[in-house]
Image (cartoon, rainbow, N blue to C red; front, side, top):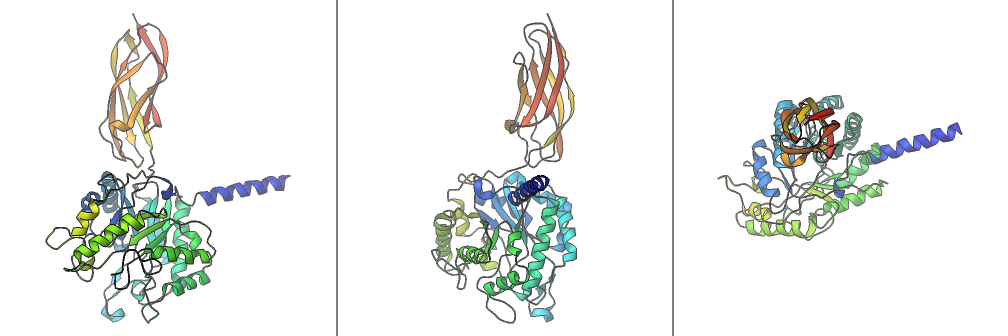
Length: 445
């Protein structure tokens, strides 16, 4: 009997672990798939103006953090601005770029070090994230030698991905780990490897590697030459993620992986701007938004003014935006409702418990927001335990996470003089934070 109980308990723990791979499934909540990639923090307002309009809210933004950019104050400010503008960040980790031309004629990204993973984990854990899910992409296109120190190493990447995922999840179940997007068009050459071969070698080295991702990060470009038609399917199309999901299933992975198209887009020229604008409109309207597996689409790239990526930029060198920005801006969108942690403290309260009948008195509470959402007046309420009392005129300035503010309210006392027990609960979005009063009230004639 004792062994049976232990077995049941073990199965229960395994079930909990399996269900808590990530904080919540983004496919199961109202979701706005629109997003875009950026390199400049100053572009966030333009991202919001693109994705959070025409009914849209809580769109996505993809950005890279390199090893030499891990400054907490800088990135907390970035997250806070994303929070204010209702943008969900997808963060891609990267190493350092080595521009030594002897390495591969155009420079390479340094090989990532497993020994540095704990530094990444500590850095990420020091930040107050925007939503409950912490979306982290582990590197970029490692089936290109330039992305891995000048060589191709599927075994090294598989080991790094699994180790990084394990350490993130051991520190918090909120991490939502995404693989590096791979180049679906890469050939078997000295400097690149076919994606299927690369993934086959990953699985041969680390058989369960794809069980350590929570979603698929896909670079579903419209090839060949970034100029394909938007209604194409299969590998090397804007639905290339479908082929990738099938490949992952063939390795025995059972779970359904939500899709994050973290890179896609057509090459723009002075002659084809309208053509690719129409292709983007078709893709969002008829492909990505119709596929329930797709969580986010963040084309590459909002603003890049230099070669070799200027032809992918949505922003012109004169500061204006190309036609596709305006047309995608005008498409109808969905109001996303991502899950945010709501948490806070009631630090200090004051209410004079002595009053005359029908009296009205001010009550005060110093409250602190330690969650992820911004507290606005319409989000808060006070609930009284005794219907003889009435709370009126609640005042609280907008309160961002990790900040405190003074809550002021007016309490109307009952007509009948008596001794009363009263509890006044403080709620944010229907979640109780604490009590602003809990004790006796005495009213006099």
